[in-house]
Image 1 (tube, rainbow, N blue to C red):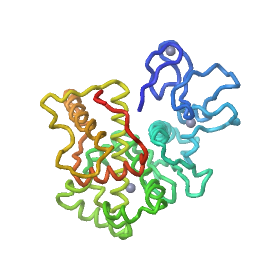
Image 2 (cartoon, rainbow, N blue to C red):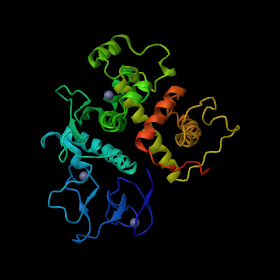
Image 3 (cartoon, protein in one colour):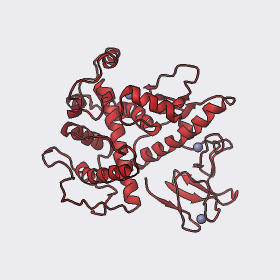
Image 4 (cartoon, protein in one colour):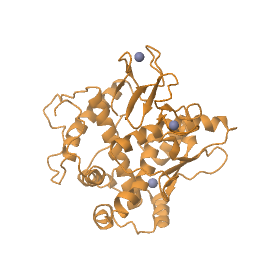
Length: 346
Ligand SMILES: [Zn+2]
Ligand SMILES: [Zn+2]
Ligand SMILES: [Zn+2]
C-alpha cells in the first residue's frame, strides 16, 4: 500500500485513520481518488462518510450525490453480517471489514474487475458469519465468499493454524485466498484460459470432494515444497490457484508498502539473495518484482528475529511456484510495464 499524509498539516497518516492525530482534521479514504482526503465539515459538495462508519469502523467515503445510508465500495460488497444484538460478532465484523478494505484497495489499485453481487449476477460478495455457536464453512460459491469471523480471535486462529500445520494464517490472508477463487472464474474460466491453466496448475475437473477427503486423510504429498507455495495448495488445482493468487497479493502489497516508505535493501554479501539465476522462465516483468522481493523478505525476516518473532515471510519460492506466480501476474497485470519498486534500485 502507498503511504498517506494529512492534506492540512502533512503529517503521515494511516489508511485506517478517520482524523489526523496531529491537527484533528477529519479524514476519510476516497476510493475514487484512491487516497486519504480531508472532510470539510458537512459541506454538501464533497464526498461523505460511508453509512457503516460506526458499525464497521469504516473510514471510506461515498460520492457527494450518494443517497442517505449509502455504503462505500468496500461495505457494499458485504451481503451478510452479524445481527445487531451480537456484540462479539459485530466487533469481529468491524475487524474483518478493516482487512477487507485493505483487500479492496489492492484490487482497485491493480485494476482488477470488481462487480458487486448487488449489481451483477455472480458478482463478488461476502457473507461475514461467526462460527460462535453455529458451523461456518469458509469458502466461495458463485461469487459469494463466506468467512468465519471467529478467526479474528487470535488464540482461536493460532490454534487452527497449528492444527492445520500452516506457517501463516491471517484474516487478510483468508480474504485474499477466497477472493482468488472468484478471480479464477473471471480471469481464467471466463477468459477462456482453462487449458493453459491446466498445464501449470493441473486439471480442475478432478473431483473436489474426493480431493478434499484425500487431503485431510493423508496430508500433502512428500516434497510438495518443490511445486506448491503451501501444503493446502496441493489439495486441488483450484486451491493451488487461490493460494498462488493470495501469495501474489502478499508480494505486491508488501513491495508497494516498502517502496512507499523508502525502504532500501542493500544486500550485505553480494547479490546472491536475488532471484535464482537457474530459473529460466518468462518472468518479465515479474522478474523485477522478485528481484526486489527476495532481498526484502530476508531483511524483514531478520528484523522479526531481532524482535524474537517468527519469520514474517515463512515461505520458499521454487521454480514451479515462480512460474505459477508469473502466470497469475500476467492475468492480473497484462499491460503493466513496471511496478512500485522497493529498494530504490529502479
Ligand atoms: Zn493534520
Ligand atoms: Zn464503508
Ligand atoms: Zn480455497
